[in-house]
Length: 185
Image (cartoon, rainbow, N blue to C red; front, side, top):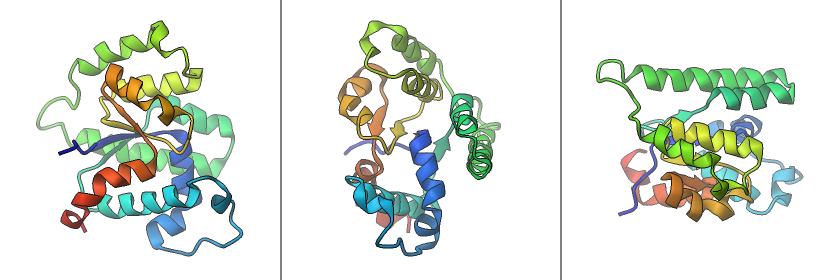
């Protein structure tokens, strides 16, 4: 059995997609035939996967994580509506962390040890922004890093082997969840 990632770090591309296609993802609204998502390779497939993931997330114990570096990327975009959305998602993440108050810390020291590896030459292929976010995800001991990007998942095997975190596009995450979906809907 493949381990299901429960604590998932949302890349800014995923966070933006959740906002841009929120009516489809959360309310099953139609996406117009002229929408740009149809032109992006696997674009609709990933948005559909996000819809399915969020449907399961209504009952599944997902923890969707963001970090201060996530928020900085949102601020750098300069869009108030996107900032509002990010703040709502950070509030959700803070709620996930607060649920651990009675049982101890939501983190072990594992994330700190693994995150130190990112400063080595093994990850020179990561952009500065990606390196910061991957580091944050590892520090937050996330099981997966969810991205709409196509380049970063090409390095997923190396990242998972070295940092114990899966780098997934939504359609890949959905494939892991699909066999268990009936348990949560």
